[in-house]
Length: 371
Ligand SMILES: C[S@@+](CC[C@H](N)C(=O)[O-])C[C@H]1O[C@@H](n2cnc3c(N)ncnc32)[C@H](O)[C@@H]1O
Image: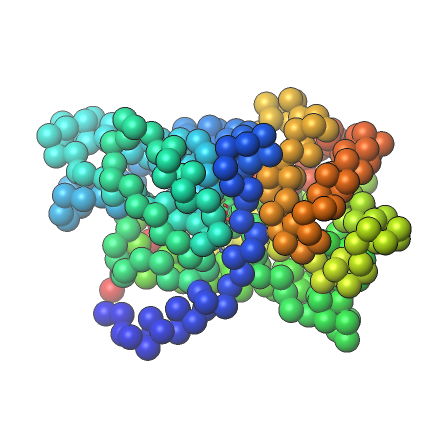
């Protein structure tokens, strides 16, 4: 039973969290909807793993009631969320049919979650007309409780869990050894900065798993896709987050000529952390509520083969433009991304690392049986 003081505590966690790093909304040329082919490639490759997950782990006979509840956490806008949900629904239907239970296929309730600043209007306007589910929007941070206890059967989250709940406080504190002066991310920063990011990510992932453990039924499934660092970083000059370092260096150049202030720059950090795969595994195991059924890297070769400067710039704009605008104002956006584009041409080997330094990780978790 969930008591009210637990609930209050979890709401407090939710309130504290930032909502400022939402993707660019709408359907325009720089919107997330139009610039999410990287994430889409991951969803497409994960389809076979979702099908196998359902074939191996969903026993129709254990469903009590006639409603199957699915949540997509960090859905953003655009086709991606709909594709992922459609894959899940179709795989479940197939599972019932293959067991001769076609007449008992449940009704599907699908909850689309994202931060409150997400463009839910575009999401709802573009919902597929022929969908086979009832759709709901759930605003709020997934680093807190979003759903009633034991109310979800399948939770999906793609390309979202490497976003931290917030920028770690100490990295914007000029009196801290973790102060991240003149950078927007942790690459090539003092080791205290990277440690602050890693500590925050560890806490966030544990909070996420704790919240989902309350919400998912016994034996329910949690399929996560997130960007992580390879455990073995290839011995090369390529490191996770180089594009963010390059973007940060453009802001440094702009600060030097007075286009942005140093204070603005020093207080801006991108809350993305690419934790090593082995750390992610350890966090899940230590949390203890879920068993790991599968953990492997997805294949994004087709995306990398097509990657060029223009795609990378639009992708970064879709991800970061809204928060950069909030921090530095609308006036610098075109100038910043023009400079970024030029630097990418100069350092174009970023687009073609010999061995990818990050992996797009797929993890299938099963909620352990609740006593
Ligand atoms: C890169 S997009 C991925 C969107 C979609 N799942 C996909 O695969 O294309 C990451 C999304 O996660 C959302 N997100 C990040 N942190 C979140 C949080 N704490 N709670 C809910 N959503 C969050 C962002 O707002 C953004 O829409």
